[in-house]
Image (tube, rainbow, N blue to C red; front, side, top):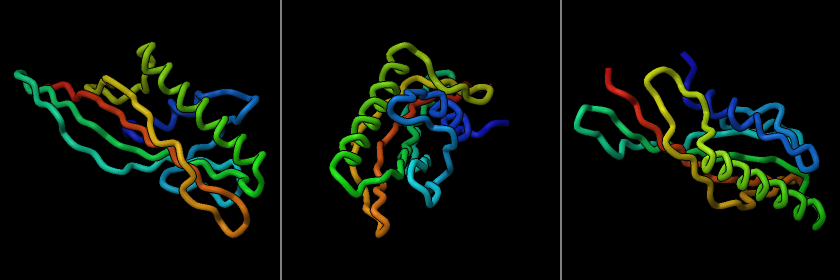
Length: 142
């Protein structure tokens, strides 16, 4: 059975704007040491609804980390261009009902994205940027 985070990773890797960035590898929890490295980390989850037949709706929160060159102004502007485009792409997928393929009995209801920001600057001049992603999904009973 494929995990929820693996399903989300596979989905996010389909983002493809070669002019900005291409996400070929998407790590779990922390990006690699080099620039242009990406990761997705779970940051909490909760059950939000149980319906009359026992289907359960959950909200899982994740942070998408992007490690990019951030030493100069042009790099930082390019990084925000990429992250804004990536966030717009996620919103577009949500609007079109194009969601990650979850394991049996699970169905995504909504993907939301928020809080594009610089999280940290490393000593080598690379920046760790983050985008928060919220996935709301239902687990069908039975």
